Image (tube, rainbow, N blue to C red; front, side):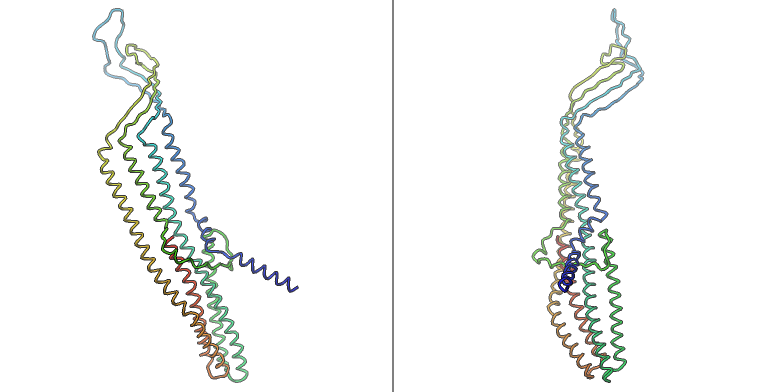
Length: 417
C-alpha cells in the first residue's frame, strides 16, 4: 500500500512539473493570439494579388473605342473626272474600332513593378516584426513578476511557520511565567500582518496570471505553475540581431528598386498592335459609305520627359538612404547605451547576490539566538520578532535579487536579439 501511495505522489509531482508554463511557451502563445499576427497573412495575400496584376501587363491589351463626329468641311477634289462620281468625304463620320496591343518590351517597367511589390511587402513585414518584437517584453515583465510573487509567497509561508513555532514556544513560556500575555499578542499580530501580506501577494498573482492569460488568448488556472528559465550565456549578450536592423535593410532594398525604376522611365518601348474597325469613311477615302477594315503593325514610343527630373530624383533617393543610415546609427547608439546601463545593473546585482547567502546565514544565527534568549527570558519577544523579521527580509531580498537578475538578463537579451 505504501508503494502504491508513493507511486501516486510521484506521478502527481511529475504531472505538476510537466504542467509548468515556460517563458517560450507564453511568448509563442501571445504572438499567435496577438491581433497584429493576422496582418502577416493579409500582407502575403496583397503581395500575391499585386504581383498577379503586374504580370498581366504582358497579356494582350484589348480596347474598344467609338467615334461620331461632324465637321464643318471635308476633303474634296478640286477638279472633276469623267465617269467618276466623287463628291468628297462626308462631313458626318462614324467609326467603331477594336484594338489589340501586345507588349514586346516596356523598358523593364513590369519587372521593376514586381520587384518593388516584393520589396515593399518585405518592408511591411519587417515593420510588423518590430511591433511583434515589443510584445515579448510585455510578456517577460508579467512572467517574471509572477515568478517574483511565487518566491515571495514561498518566503511568506516559511515566515508563517517560524511565527507559529514561536507562538507555541511563547505560549509555553507563558505557562512558566517567563512570558506575558502581551508577548503572545505580539506574535499573533505578526502572524496577522504576515497573513495580510500573503493576501496581497496572492491577489497580485491572480491579477498577473489574468493579464498573461489575456495576452496568450487562453484560460489559465489561478494556481498555474511557471518554470523559472535558465540564465542565458553571457557571451551572447552583445550580438545585436534586432528586427529593426532587418527593417533598415529592407528599406534600403526598396530604394535600390526605386533607383532601377528611374532607368525604366527613359527607355524606349516596343509593341505589336492590330486594329479592326467599321465606319464611314474607311481606309478608302474615295468611298462615301460604311465599310470594315483592319490595320496591323509594330509601334515604338520613347518619352524623354523623365530625363528632366532624373538628376533630382536620384538626389532624393540618396537623401532617403542617408536618412535610413542616420536612423540605424541612432538606433545602434541608443541600444548600446541601454546595454551599458543593463550591464551595470546586472553587475551590481551579481555582486549583491554574493553577499545574500552570508547575510541570511548571519541573520539566521541571530534569530535562533534570539529565540533561545526569549525562551530563557533574557530577551523580549518584541526584540526576538524584530530579528525574525530581519531574517525574513534578508530571504526576501535574496529571492528578489535572483528574479530581478533573471529579468535584467532577459531585458539585455531582448535589447540585442
